[in-house]
Length: 295
Image (cartoon, rainbow, N blue to C red; front, top):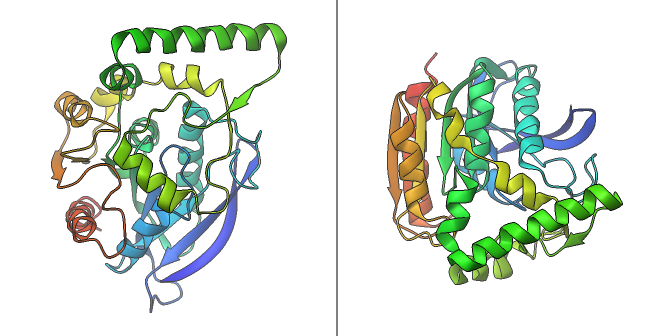
């Protein structure tokens, strides 16, 4: 895989990015381009780059970037707002269209985890996107949180977020905390995060607590009827972080060409270059995007 490091701007913030090309790609050759987008707390170096390695081996270009506020990117450090990440994704699409080795008429998006809903929002608003895939995500934040919390704990979470919002608007200073204070990890996912993600430089930085309100406000189900491009929904059968029902509900709301693929795994237990379940998922994605992005 050929890696070309670069950057672009989103709302004036400079974001680190990379264009990934297949080995042997000739100068001037225009390729379909898939933009894999990271989930919560993710970095381009982790899952977007993993998908890039797999996709470029199948002849596509790929483009990955880090959201504002992460690593050394522009934007307030540690401020994570879902609506701003949607904007970053949309601006990545605009930027990719300017690249000499990208066919601007064949651009697709992948959203992993939290980004599954983000890419649906971005695709509904960005006409240059020809196809989109949501993987192991959630699409309605409140439904998701209610499915993983006991009712009393969910109510307490809402109250805590409301209190922090009131404090922020009256005092004007952000508070930061552990990134998973509002984002509960199941044991299997937690093990992968501790063993494989926290070892990546920059992963796990403290997050501004106004993330909580942004999370509660997000609902990609509202855009389902606006999507008129092919949509791929993939989800782990045994995913306890983001239960599969949320993806099935979103899939059933879609009125466009769509595919549903059940992954034989949990959330990220299979997310490794040499894992057969990951290979199977990539084969499905390759078939989907090959059809959707035909010249």
